[in-house]
Length: 316
Image 1 (tube, rainbow, N blue to C red):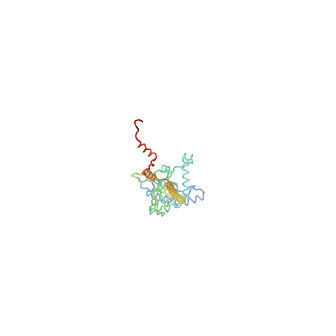
Image 2: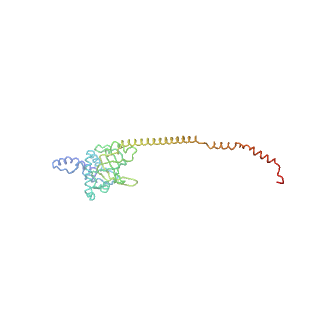
Image 3: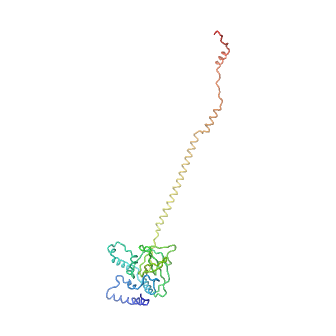
């Protein structure tokens, strides 16, 4: 492993030789870093130790801040183009993806399993962030970096394995961490250098995660469709009004039917004799005395005469 002094010397030589390289390129017309001259040489990262206790070692700190400063000074768009170029190069190395361009290369598993292939190269990852903290940068870094942001991101193909991202810029809404009341934010994109395989502790065990050094976090929160929300409120209000109108009409209709029924019943009652009246009339008729017809006078006299006649003689 390189000592801190050797890494500082190497970084200094790269800085000194950069103008000479550009001058040579102007003369020869060749660019040794084609097609993206802003991309660092992966060989600078060869001595960075993976799975080391303590995260970024003291001997790696100079290169660590050098990369972060380099990212600040270069265009994010150029970084993304270089990352896409690296991705296509990797696809060309794998037969399955070379023969089937429609297939998507699972980038996280490939980085996780092939760290030596990806170390020191730019990549672009998209996923969701579940942890975001910020802390002061080392005071003795010579690039004037004041604050570092640390994000733990999970991609669609990383399952439960995180990517640890260190950057120097975040959107204003994330300056103090995740939004209040939020445990996770989605639609986060980061482009940066694969620095090393980072060792961390989790639930009484040690785990590893790729460590990415980036310029910034890009967050695209889902937009709320205000027009759609207003339309929903209008539809809901209209439905409520129609429902209440329907209920009111049904109540009014039932009331009208009850009123009509009562009126018809009243008219029917007035045209009929009640059973009480019929019963009273029958009782009165039964209690009236019967008048006997007068006796026949002729019959009576005849009867009287026959009663007064003498009895028949024995002769007759």
